[in-house]
Amino acid sequence: MTGALFAQSLVLGVLLGGLYALLAAGLTLYFGVMRVVMIAHSAFLILAAYLAWYFHERTGIDPLLSLVVTVPLFFVVGYGMQRFLVSRLRPITLTTMSVLLTFAVALTIEGLLGFVWTGTQRRIQLGYSGTSIEVAGVSIAVVKLVAFGLAALSLGALYLILRRTSFGRALRATTQHPEAARLIGIDTDRVAGLGFGLGLATAAVGGTALALDYTIYPSLHWHWIGPLMAIIVVGGLGSIPGAAIAALLLGVAASLLQVPLGTTWAQTVFYLALFVTLMIRPQGFFGGRLAQRF
Amino acid sequence: MESELESELAPQATAGQAAEPGPAAEPLLRLTDVQAGYGRAALVLRGLSVTVAPGSVVCLVGPNGAGKSTVLKVASGLLKPRAGQVVVDGVDVTGRSPQQLLAAGLSHVPQGHSVFPEMTVAENVLLGAYTVRDRSEVEARTDFVTELFPLVGERWSALAGALSGGQQKQVEFARSLMVRPKVVLLDEPSMGLDPKATAVVFEQVRRMRDAGTAVLLVEQNARRALESADVGCVLDLGRVHITGPAPDLLADPRLAQLYLGGRPKEVS
Image 1 (tube, chains in turn brown, cyan):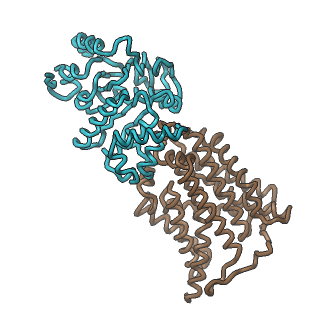
Image 2 (cartoon, each protein chain N blue to C red):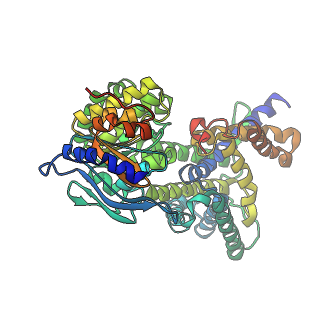
């Protein structure tokens, strides 16, 4: 691999890793707060991508503007999903049953997407779709930069919400010790609902970013959920910083491996990392002591 | 066996009740004939009654499975009683949520470590005032708890999970006092601590009492807990079998043999 090719792959890997980081942050948020394995996260991601595509098709306006609708919409749907579906699962089997429940939701979304928009592949064509900028000999597609910027902004916003707001502190407290959180007056059920909404809102942002650069079709979510699950296990279940670090590292690794191995085999790096993690450090590499409690 | 024990200790029980505050001092917390259990399983508490007077430390001791921790869970709203009554400062709060009971004046420090380990000591303590909207009150309470527990102020910016077990317990105590509670419920505060840290924890229980907060304490380390308490209650099979001044319970030979693991303490 030449130096230029390496640099190109590295930059693409960082950009892809940023998107993975946002999506994995949402996924690990569900698990951290509610011990829910949200298989439907990537299905909502593809739904958001479809909504962005449809918005652009109907209005001709930049799909980024669809976020004004999809982010609050997904937040409300997430809140409702937690309060009316997930919270009805028995606590003792919550994690296991949430896999089945959200698997069913994922299949339903996939079916509805196929029913409404058929299985035809869709792609957004924008004025800047084919445009690239060159920095130090590395060519970067503008859509990838926009997607990365969107992911970075959202992660920054998520960080600020979790660190600087009263709700964020309540959410983190609920994640770290639910019973103690209840005993200091936090309405943990409401916090769980809002946390679920926040997680799904990240899917709305991620889906829109995805729609800028990817061809979409209803079953595309299966392609995403495996790597995302691997990322949150490697990062340490429930740890958002852990998920972000693992996402960036694995995104870069997958991108670098694409050159010698090809796109399909490069994806195996996620599963390889998953196996290695489960064998030598099941609590994940970046989750700290919190992850050890799961 | 139980009835024999009860009859033998009856005079002490009477003495214990006499030592409790009279009618002028209305209890801050009163549990009356409480029955409670988990799910469909058998009852853990079978008609338990206990009171906590202002400015006192009441200690519940008894064998494993007696229902000690369940009493605190019922009092703080984590477990709804199937029968009976919970009254806080004259107000019936039976069956209310933990949030409502916190507002009524009950603050519960659960068993084991309950700090938020990935948050700083400051965040932990200030979260204790999560339901308090008045900033000046939060500042006043922060000053109060950092004065009562100097270590909390010294380790203000440290990660709570990085503190030792005894230090974490101090953070939990400080957090529980941020809402100006009437009664603090402490569930086995010495669990997992070495003797030195245990001594510090019980010293701080007394300091909480001296600072004006009543304490309902549950402990496995019965002898140590009774040494710090004003009133002791011996639980067995979900009921209070004996109530009395803690020094009297410590001095009783039968009680020492059955529940305190050895000879009675000599009371001067």
